[in-house]
Image 1 (cartoon, rainbow, N blue to C red):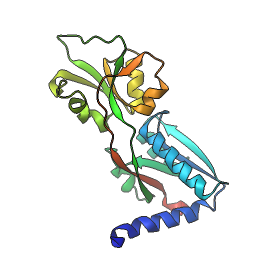
Image 2 (image 1 turned 180 degrees about the horizontal axis):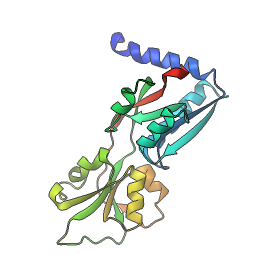
Image 3 (image 1 turned 90 degrees about the vertical axis):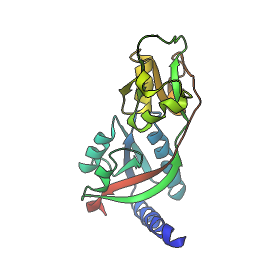
Amino acid sequence: MNELLNGFYEQYNYFFKEIVTNDKIRIGTLGPCGTSSEQALKYLSCFIKKCDKTITIETSLKNNFLDVYDALNRGLINYALIPTAYERVTDFYWNNRFVNNLNFIFPTPEYGLVCKSNYVPIKNRKTRIACCPAVENIIEYLSNGELKNEMVEKVKTNSTTEAVICLINDEVDLAITNRTSFNHYSNKNIKFISKTYNAIIVWSLFKQKDTL
């Protein structure tokens, strides 16, 4: 068992030895406010603060992970926090200027189908559902099998927060969003209409090699 964990311990020890030498660090991840990535960053920031109360942590929320990648590549942020569920996470692992220097487990908030409070299903056309790629495959599960793939038109978004904004703007019929994104817009006449689901995700922190 220790052999499986040694690499994680080594990363952990090195990371916390490194950050205590800094007065301020800037961490980028997917935004806007409410995303699962932002919740994971809050969790990590709290943990860092427990280890070093003097450090200042700046959060940089980007509209998509490509922008996070670009910010790290250009040195605009010190670290990039990426979920391993992101479909292009290998872009970070295989950039020879980056190094994966910390990994931790953090569960996502609950995800579910959301609609406007006055929503009435429209017959004779597909149901338009806003969703980010990571969760598009749970539509049938969330709807208890009522919304099969051939009955749905998926409107791809970058995040759960963007998905709920699409719903608020009447661009879709339904949206898959998480509880924290929902809470940001709970005063916008929206409601959950399905069971919920969350995932236990490994989060990876990357930095530029030349800053080691």
